[in-house]
Image (cartoon, rainbow, N blue to C red; front, top):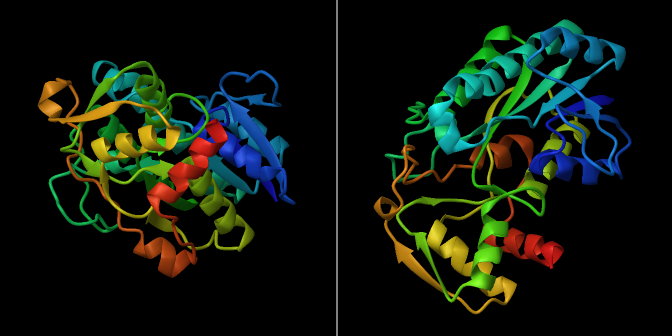
Amino acid sequence: MNILVTGSNGQLGNEIRCLSVDSGHNFIFTDVTEQEGVETVRLDITDIETVRLVAESESVDVIVNCAAYTNVDKAEDDERTADLLNHKAPENLAIVAKECGASLIHISTDYVFGGDRFTPLGENETPSPESAYGRTKLAGEKAVRATGCKSIIIRTAWLYSPYGKNFVKTMRSLTSANSTVKVVFDQVGTPTYAADLAALIMHIIDSGQLDKTGIYHFSNEGAVSWFDFAHEICRMSGNDCEIVPCLSSEFPSKVKRPHYSVLDKSKVRNELGFTPPYWSDSLEKCIERLK
């Protein structure tokens, strides 16, 4: 199959690129900018005519949308741009996918929920976003489904990898340079190793499950606070730093972040036959790669 990957220079896109080496499929990796040292087709997914041209010329069978506006804080001041990338662009991809008879795998977020629950969040939970980022991502989900294209929407959370900027890389740097670091302990969720999410996407494609359309939740298994996560990052990295727990109120922000956003992965396990690895096992693998 011909598989078009958008946002291929990001964390998830790069992990899919790694897995594609051993795949029998033909991948077309695209991004709005080029990445040094790798083959990338320049593609602006906010321009539907350009998307249509590339999809038709490459006879695309599957579109994997890894592109998004992910700066949660900046989205509060520039919701228009966030909406363009998180709502309008996925709609463009969905429209073109339907025209081409292709399947769309679209990545969404736990931020579509408000975080006021204290049990794992299932796919049927009513979304209640409390941030510009969450609102625009939810609008993207709705737009994709409204087109009627064959789509699989995967909500994920706390993404990290050896690529780009993320919490794991930031904590490794901070705990190596400081004797103490303060991290919030009143926000609980589950980290997601981008390599595991990429493996799920490849599993869906390779096992012929693109017809199992709908919304799925995926992160690594377990539940942890940012404080606990940081503590393990520091320990596994071999850094001598004290991680000090603190409240979210000590780090004022325009964004109301979910206090509890553990995703229920039962549907991924039961319907797609994919078991999410435990969060600390995957963290260890990532840190070994970073070392």
